[in-house]
Image (cartoon, rainbow, N blue to C red; front, side, top):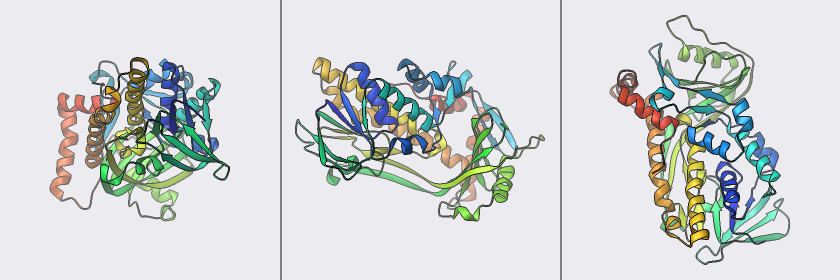
Length: 393
């Protein structure tokens, strides 16, 4: 098999890149270890930054998002039983975010890719990358994990295969540096059949710590509470979950949280991770293969799309004008944005969670940070600009 760009991974990075390259007339093939059903049914939260929404529309993939997504002009911060609305739209010259789950985005991207005749090979196994330091790198794989060995010969290999995929490991250990922070808390997330209790996302640091009130549809809500990442979900009865949600989201003005049947729940750990550099020879890594952020700042999917937007422009310059400087600068260009997103996600996470390893002094500083957003327009604007998506340099 021969193509210009071989892409490993049918997540946000790989699929967005395929659409961007197709628009530029650059050929590519995607291989993915999971089945299409597994990709589309793995439920993941999603808050799309303003520019990502515009990109989906520009690619002709935004029809369902515009119909089913929830456009938000702001977010609500809560502490000490009081709420403060952050006017995202007013602070960013009219920009908004859209709450639209990641798996729904992937459904749209996959359907669009296949309808345009693009190739995605699902369910592959034994993926290996070789000859990255030559002009003719290759990807070996087996269909269904057990079929005959097949090879994709290509000009460039894109590792969009997540944290556990083979792409990052193909960068020699002596030539990469990995930065990681493991947080001493996790999120217990639920899906509940209930009407909306609030018109926008609520991020709160109250009671025993963090809680997030979000939405999936008019009658399905998504909620999270801070918990021990090593805890057993069996220890969390529905009654205990609702008790904690009421405590952490309660106010002094008579507002009440609407309960409903919980039909999904689970615990996820939180961590920050960055790999430098994001390229080696003819290999370029993107998305979770290169960096992970805690979900508090809603940056994961958006950062993956930012990577491949930079990469698509660099590949376009190489193929159309034989200019390789943008490809050479890919890692440095992306990492400037990556570290800003890591900083914002760390800021939101530390500000909104209770950390038993911190002193009372540090906890009071976090409340001061929250109050600064309430009282300082400059602080509120900085939060809003980061939340809705930083501009590209």
